[in-house]
Image 1 (tube, one colour):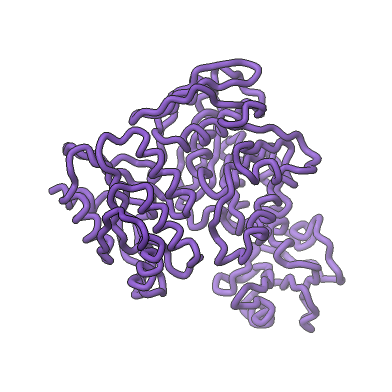
Image 2 (tube, one colour):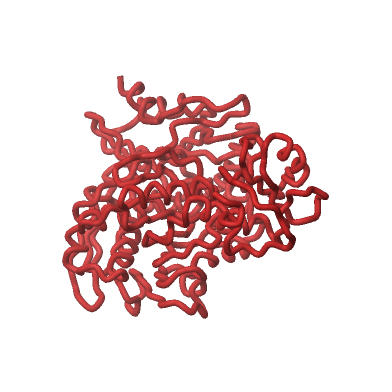
Length: 474
């Protein structure tokens, strides 16, 4: 592709020579002959510092924010903002041929995107999915490295979807991706907000920064759909030029509301009320399943799908790996794996389990290392207040000392009488929990969800909680 075609729509502040571009790259480790290298300044590394080296390794030109004294440099105002449009041009602007649905919020994104995909597929549409657990082009699965991929991978996935005949793409859009411009220039037909609670402050530093990053999504959509029950739900759609719709359980003035909610171990039932009324059954237990399924239904209805068909489609939806996932066993207790790794996520899952538990709720959890430390005692307090028994263990300690993370967690539990046990090794903790389970117990393994690895100070190891449970059951 000609360099001028790759740069189409991007403001360039200097003259440049024409060249043939084979790829766009912002990672100096992946540079190859014929690439256009984009100099990105990150927290610890500035791509401008290796621009000359990238030319020597075969880059046809470098995109930069300042004059580097190179004959084949492309000067732009902001390289991070330019990266997404550059990659879009490289792949033929595939998102323009897709009807994009974006989901953002602290909790519920993964399950809700899967529900939307399943609803639309039940209604005869071919749908792509991008998110935390996996990326999908129709039924074909691709591994997910980030909740929202970098611009090159994202546009490559869009291209695959278009080539495969997908009409829709539903995707999780993380706050970090929005802050870093990974979806710059990408327009969404619909964008939905789930909720906002404390998370990712290690990156955003302040809650206001976190909120403002989420807000970016709604400035680039035709229809904004928000959770009216969340205190930030109304604020995030204020003064938007697009159409705004809402959903809620507590707020009857919402455009789509859930009423007469019933909970069971098999799922949730409620009346979906808008211009019509229909009885919904979602076969995923838990109070948050009401919000996730209601959000998914609201998106489908906002896109003008038939009300009765959407209600029926919801009842045929299935769960998502690592989201209130019941691990099969023939014992008289239940083991559930869930990704809850934030204070709100942990509170939601434990509260939901308590609503139909016949015995104890035993919560096994930890907190990630090299992440927001302030949420550790908060999560400890929540687990102790809501559970009948707690097992405090390791999550992904990364470079931190696991015992220090546990000490931070215990600070929030010290004034609460709920019994607990500390077992630092997560495998040993799970085995102990299973072997000491009582009849009708629900053992909640919180924090890792779909992950099949554990990141330790010594490196990353294979770690699948399903395998550990199976071993303990033997």
